[in-house]
Image (cartoon, rainbow, N blue to C red; front, top):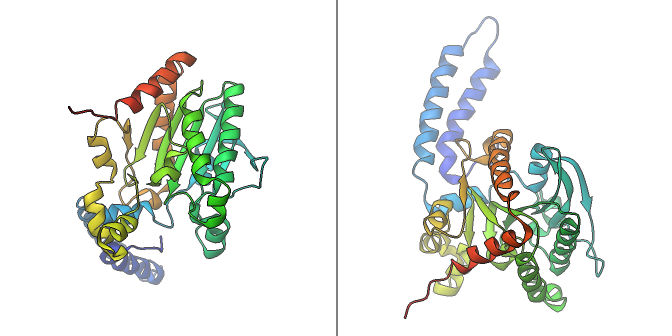
Length: 317
C-alpha cells in the first residue's frame, strides 16, 4: 500500500523500514529477527491508531484511493458479469456501473458507483458522481431485474450526484426522485451496501432497499463534511468539525436503530489494506440477508421496504 493518510504516517515509516530490511536481506546477512520485531511493533501501532479514529479520519478512510470499488467487489464476489450501458435517452454514464451477474450461482442484478484511482480514471468516472442518465440507466436495469425476478445488489460510494449545469438541465432532481419512487415498489429483494461515501440524494437514489449494510469505515450523510462546513461556517476547510457534528460513521448511523441493518467489519487497517478478506466478509453478510429476504413474497418485500422508511420518522406533538 502506497497511499498513506496523514494519521497513518508513523505506520508508513515503520513499514518502510521493514521493506528496507527485506531488500537488504541476503543469504549471508539475516535480518529476520529485526523484521519480526518491527512487524510486531507495526501491528501494535496499527491497532492503537485504528481503535481511536475520529469521524474525520473515518471519512478519509471512506474516500481512500485504494479502497475497493464496485468493480472490485464484482470481481471478488460475483461471477459471469455482464455490464449494461446507456439509459436509452441520452448516453451512458461511467460513474454508475450497472449489469447482471451470478451470486452463489444465482442470477442477480448489480449496480454501483465507480470512482477512479488515477487522474484519467477519475475524469472518466466523473469522480463517482452520476449524471441523470446514470440514475435512469440504473432504473432501467432494476426494472429488467424485477421483470425476471432477480435480486438486486447496489453498492453506494459517491460524494453526491453531479451538480453541473448540464445535469440540472437534463433533470437531475427528477431522475433521483423517480428512482426513489420506483425502488420503493420493486417486487424483488434489494440489498444495499454503503461501501465508501454515501452522500446525499446521489447515494439514496440507489439505496432504497429491504436491507442496508454499511462497511465499518464507510460514511452516510445528507451532505459532505466540507459542504456542511461551507454552509454553516462559510469555510469548507472546517470539514473535520462538520464531520463530528454530522455523526456520519457506520456506528453513528447504526445507533439510530432504523437506518441500516448491519455494519460489516473490515480488516485491521481498513478495506483498502486487504480487498479479498473484505469481499469474503461482505459476501457472507450478503448471502445471509438474501436468504432471509428470499422467504418473503413480493407484497411482503414492498411492505417491509415501506415500513423501514416509515420507521425513520418520529412525530412529536
